[in-house]
Every structure is written in structure tokens, then in C-alpha cells.
Image 1 (cartoon, rainbow, N blue to C red):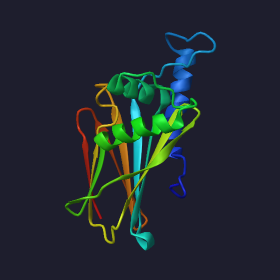
Image 2: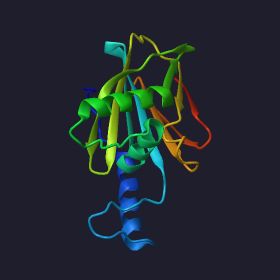
Image 3: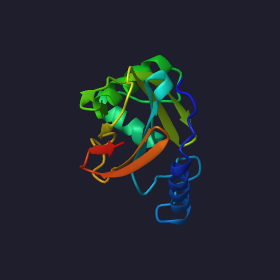
Length: 180
């Protein structure tokens, strides 16, 4: 599995804000039902590991949003926490391959799906891209959930040589360019 994922500490405040808004704001949910959140956001992190010539990629989205996107795309019932992990893996892989791309120094870097895990209100999707020795320019195309929400925000982090750069993409913008 992708090593050393810091569980997106920068994303945690968004989850807390959504929870606070859901219980204190309009439309309080009945007990036992997940609270809706007032915004749609995903976070993708692309970390280059020079010794391994590898990009480790993780993408974090709200479970309910991602299940809705998968259900709309594949016209089937989606339960990322259910018993059919292998079936869900196929759907997650197909969706992510269509909505997340990496280009390094002018060349497409094929992403290899590693897997996903659900933690609380979030789903983490892990990918890798290998055989990448040096990195000067990183271009990420991220349209995760853009097919479902026209207020979607994608936060993209790129880390190369220990230097971190971040960009926010507001729908319909899909490309983040980083220069190292």
C-alpha cells in the first residue's frame, strides 16, 4: 500500500466544519442518518519518491459524494463498506482512471490503482506512477466529482524533493500545473 499517508491533516478541518454545520445549521438530520455537508471537496496529493523513482498518489473524498458519483456512473447500488470489496475496487479503479491523470515533464505518467479504504466520512483512493527519475513540471488533471457537482472544489498538492506546492481548482477548472 502507499507508504506514509499523513491522513490529510489539512483536510480534517473541512470534515469538522461540515459536521458542525450539519448539526447546527439548517436541515438537521434525523439520528442514524449521515449529515449532509454544505460543500463538495476532494483532496489529491502527488508525492515524488526520488529513491524509488515513484509517485505515490492519494485522493480523499467524502464517502457519500463518491458513492453517489459511482452510482450515477455505473447505474448500480454502491456500498464502499460492504462485503463486495472486489466489485467496488473495479468501479473505483474505472472511475479514477477517467478522472485523475498525471503528466510529468510533458509525458503522461500512467497511474496504477493500488486500492481504497474508508475511514469515517472519507474514502482514500491510492495510486502509484513509477519509472519517474526526475521531475521539473507536474501537470495534474483532476475532475473527480465534477460529473456530479458544479460547485466541486479540488485541492491538489504536489511534493517533489521535499518541496510542497498546492493549488485549488474550482469547477470547471481541471488542471493544476506545478514547476519545481
